[in-house]
Amino acid sequence: MLETADLIAGYDSLAMQLGGIIEIIDGLEPTDDTEDFIETLREAAIIELGALEDLSKALSLASASPPSGEGAEIEKPEETGLDQTPPPPSDNGELPPAQAGGEIDLGAFQNALDAAFTESETTLDKVNQEVKTIVDDKSAQYLEDVNDFNAAYLKLVARWDAFHDGYDEWQKTDGGCDRAETLEELGGFSQDMADLGRQVRAMPQSGFLLPVYTLLAEAAEREEKAMRALYNSWRPFTVDAFIAVDEERANAARLRRQANIGLQELHDRQ
Image 1 (spheres, helix red, strand yellow):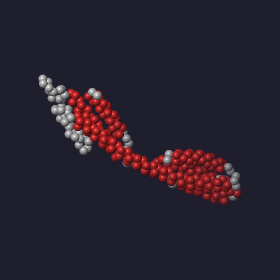
Image 2: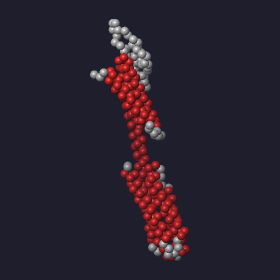
Image 3: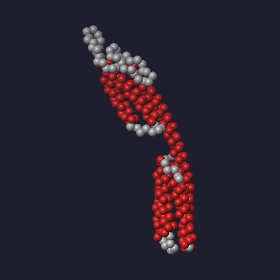
């Protein structure tokens, strides 16, 4: 059987651990979804801590009381603020402070601790269920957001690739070297690329989708600028402006590949 000193040391150790748990809870970053949960957990831990401290102090007081009997001088114990015969725990699990003097009913303190533990377990189960509900809802929303983005992405890529095919076919003839006709066609390509840029910028861009969105937006911006520069600088039988477009297309292709990888990683997290 454990000695009283061992019991006191054990309860004090548990109290220190609970104090550390409370510090961890206090360090949690509250959000709209978790603020109430954090406060509920903190209150439950504080109730447990108070019950542990009360029982530890009661044991200390009981072990310090001198035995009664003939010839024994009974000294009044030092005032500690603890009841010697505490009433049952109140509805909120708190044990009223006790008065010194008389025999200590340790069972009442143990009952208070047991009640606090039981209440904490119930609280933890409730919080776990509510957190699971939030996580499930968030997961469903995550899946919906990724699927919506992917649908928009597939439409964008199909249109973007078709734009490249049309431009490549046109470049083979250089517009027949007819200046007016070529400028008109280049103006059309520039406008088409600008429309693609607007389509990219209309895609979802919040939270976990932002990195993929940013890559696509940069790719579109590079090609937009290159097409505008080609339209403004084109001259018959010149190649410099075309080379600049090809370079930016290569850069944009790299960014698009990175975006595709990022989107695939989002899918893999589902």
